[in-house]
Length: 458
Image 1 (cartoon, one colour):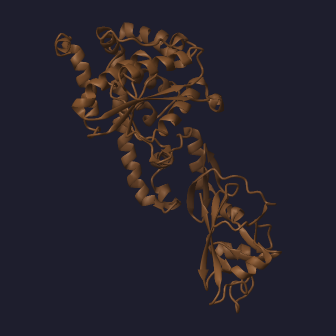
Image 2: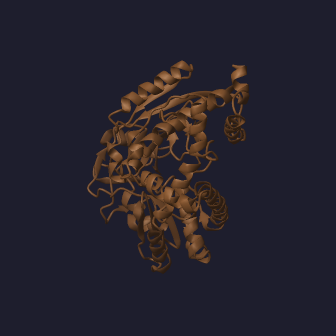
């Protein structure tokens, strides 16, 4: 083995050194690296390189293969990956996925979505290692620019990226791409020198796919006039990545000025100007794991926030999130389900009561001398309804009976939350409203137990 390594051309040692240099700042002793192994030349080369680097860098290596079921040869690829890993005594997890739920996004995007969901569920990984390289980076930048992407989209693929989706055991493993500085030609030369075998994906030649069209039709033409265009485009993506970091830092600083809990103070948001306000909203959406909205949609959201009357109802959908306005503040919220006005549900005694149709969960805590009388609830049962209008509540024995509408306004509860606030009834009597209190006469006595009822939004 030693003699064969000495006979290897130095450029191949350089490829391994390049990957090692990319890994070294992130990989720690006993780190668990899981390679996304497709069976194609790029991932097969990265498997060989990682296998050689595992001992010097002290990490543990395994692989995951995702069968999308798109190609008629998909099972052959899975079997090839299984044989490859078995010969190298490397553990392999095989996953079959269904891309049908995401087909509306396009086949390539659907496959990517399904694949990354598998990566996010690798609970035994510290890093998911992918084999994208310099040519992929150039293609990604062109695709993003042709789709009208901004600075963050133009940054293409970073060397390391945290996954937004969480796995069952906590935060998902980070994505690590240690071959971004290597060209397709360098990778192919390494594969030939080491007599590696790999599978060819017939779809890579299908120019109906956007990426393949750029790879086979567009970039070769550009390369005739600009021979180094792939490296240059990849370098440009790096510059945009740096600019994106600066924008993120500016957004984080602006957030400290504008955010108050889950609210953006509109007067301070307006002072930022449109460009920085949009940058802040994009940054917040990114932190929530939501895709960046179209620029025009974001601009319209800010226009409505800034120009609406003080009591105007603003509701702008930004993909899976929405912008709303109340009492001089903007709220960036997960899209809320429509409130089912005729909802009536009976409580079955569970201490934690998920109510996805309302976007939250009711919690019941048993306390002596506090809350809604357990005895009276046992006698009459407890049910849940939503506001219909006209409800009244007296919270203190010597206090006045007040309209629920006024009580909720005084509690500064935004209108969209009032619509989804669960009201607790015994028979036809409103006996408790989470966040407000228990109706007079229904409180637990000093010597008896009561239910403390709280409403927690998702």
